[in-house]
Amino acid sequence: SQTIHQWPATLVQPVGSPLSLECTVEGTSNPNLYWYRQAAGRGLQLLFYSVGIGQISSEVPQNLSASRPQDRQFILSSKKLLLSDSGFYLCAWRLKGSQAEQFFGPGTRLTVL
Amino acid sequence: QKEVEQDPGPLSVPEGAIVSLNCTYSNSAFQYFMWYRQYSRKGPELLMYTYSSGNKEDGRFTAQVDKSSKYISLFIRDSQPSDSATYLCAMSANQGAQKLVFGQGTRLTINP
Image: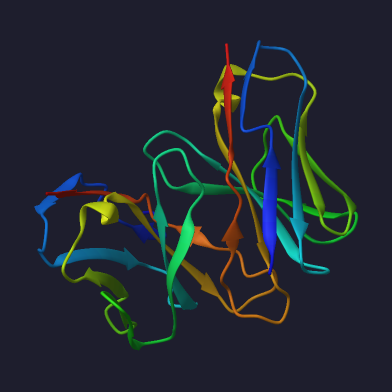
């Protein structure tokens, strides 16, 4: 069966510091991978998605970047965090050839102070 | 106008009641419709998935899609306190990376 991991689970960072959040998927190959951000009391905003190694599509202009160095690894980064980067970051995967359902990881709660 | 509209609630009902959760959408290209359940401080969990119009039932949960009205619903029968969570609708067109568009989520509380 497939599992998805995210770490760290929680993170408190000062404004201006760098960020690296990691997501890994087990039990599948060549998945589509997605990064979402969820602000308090709001729905999910798609930030980036990837259909393969090194292939990243950005959905909204922002202070973040994403990379996919390995098939089942997806990384979200920032060089300098802003207060507005605070939120709940969720990674998701989808099996190619399936229909549209995506499966989410446990999330990382980021607080920028 | 948002592509997907969902009443954020909160919605509070007594245990055993039938719960109705709804979303409307504007993009007629949407063909895949999902409901996710999200407990506090956890990732969303896929609850129901429907393709195109019609009904789908899974235990106490029923999902309905009315594409002509651009309206989807999730019904929960015999609601339990463990059903207390935020419910998110999501939908996708049959294109490329199958990006999901989410509603804001409805916060539901089932009172014992």
